[in-house]
Image (cartoon, rainbow, N blue to C red; front, side, top):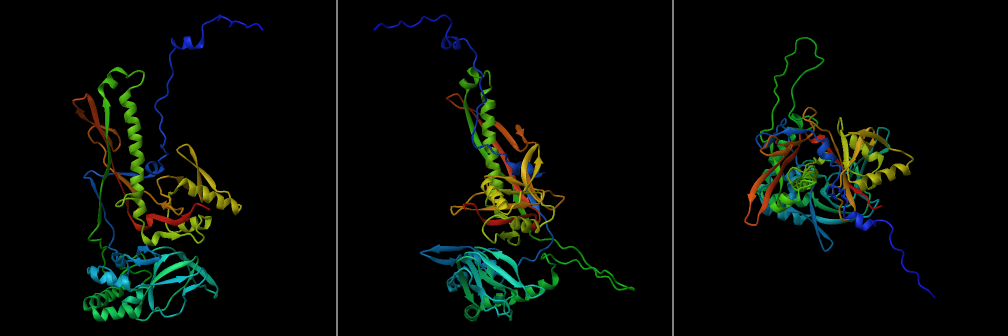
Length: 463
């Protein structure tokens, strides 16, 4: 058997030729960059002094927020400080009394379909929904049962009974899922008041104040503005004025920062064809912008998810994001500018629409085609968290100062500013020839009136 010698090359090889060629390179790429719709859609307001004060009309706050419960070994307990969300315990400053009250709640279990309280019966206890979903129904105009609302974890029922007087349930509360409810019987609360004179005096005084508020407040809880309309003759017009909240909320600008380090040898010798410092800054600022949007949603002080008024929280009747749920969310405010939701929630909503034979609209924003519902854009943001049990939130907001909406806050015109609200400051070169640059972004968000921001909570996305 004879072997064939390799054929000698007749032309310059590719490997050798590449030693003389110029490589075309991309700029550095980065995962994790998102459209950042919230930063693009919020109207930004200049905050020259670093603090923004939200002035509103005087509102009578009655403490109707959500109550947090903790769980240990299958038993739930109300967090004592959260009891101040009940009308009768608003502004109670005795922590020991609140701890005693928290231990007086008794745990009750309800299976799906069981009745927790029934229309027309006397309210004999205050209930806190520790876990589960409850549907409220009541008689319609012609006697039929109509659905009034859906409640979820942290909601409470019957708190008015603690202020005294006889009252009846104006709805029937039925467990939509297996529910755990913490109940404080009226008799138990009265017995504690009999032993604690300070608590009894507080409840009595607050009951009178709430009665006065009912006559001096409009349906939004604001101090009324006296006026007459449709009058005949020469009646005496009521004198009036618009009262302001004496303790308006003030929001200080938050900040996100990083310290970028670049060796001077790199920027001296390896700066072509791309500027090394420019590329480092470009990627650093992109990461900073991502953190900025996350803060605007999740920050414990000014984050939108933590500033939703309890009256603007809705719970899905089925747990899934349905067209009916988004319609209910739209009905809570005028001029909704957009929805904001996690991409998986938007996909789940599309699935629910398909199952009903409905095909959502599309609209165009900044040249990009996005989903919409009732001509309101449904924008994605992966900064809205999904909990461990697969639930998330859909936000709906009206925006802009002129519309009493949601606004972004920042200060521009800063030294060494490279983008609005973002500045890069050279901080020096150390003894190892490493140059440092401080990159900062200032930001916050404000909800000017409560109905500017609403949420559909506990939306299931793992079905």
